[in-house]
Image 1 (cartoon, each protein chain N blue to C red):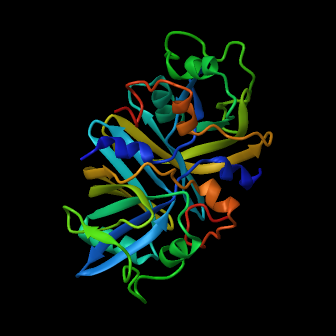
Image 2 (spheres, rainbow over the protein chains, first blue to last red):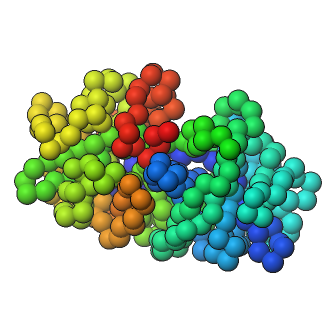
Length: 165
Length: 165
């Protein structure tokens, strides 16, 4: 058995954002995908240790910002390697408030999707949140960032990621 | 709201295979991903109308063949647009039997992952099957097929897909 085979699965790279008691949270995620088209169900998989998981569990809504291929590593580091419990990740970041009240990151974003949670599944270290799309827009026609491209750019993977080996 | 925003989510392209009463089934899927790394949990989302869904529900195991970028459209059509109830998709296809007894497609395959199901989640028209990896191997270092590349090649999307718009 070669666990490296799991790296052959393709992913994008996203900022998943939510809110709790007026406090915003946002984190990098790669496990975001569509589950059905009627109704449109979207899923995102978040580590239980992450503040964003706590926010989504409570607020039952989140937004997904699809990152552009040219997103600076510094921006990914800001959302991916520091905790929203410790500092305000949204300071200096361009965002708007969505229909459900969650923040939607607009910087380095090709498109966004806003989701109202209707189900959650326990997945060991992670929770899979599933919900209906309440809003979705394309912001520009830039190429999207893939997880593969991120790895080629020597981007690191935190221990809290679904794909950490 | 622009539903086309959902096309900005990145996916690979896979053959998901299983078996029921000695009858093999295999289908094209794009919604395959890792949910956690400890233990390694893998998920695949399959339409309830598909024979493969029936097989996985009963046998509680499936294999994932990660398709190469140069996979012929004809091969994808064979597994993606015809039902395993009507004809034997595996005739003339190179495959092996995995540890759980499911077939593993080897033609046009970069890597495979074999999964024993431990949970399933209802997702409207689809079922999300989640399980532990029992085997995984890389077969070659070819580039993998992404769903984006498949669309660029004018590949069609059946109505039973998670991403059908």
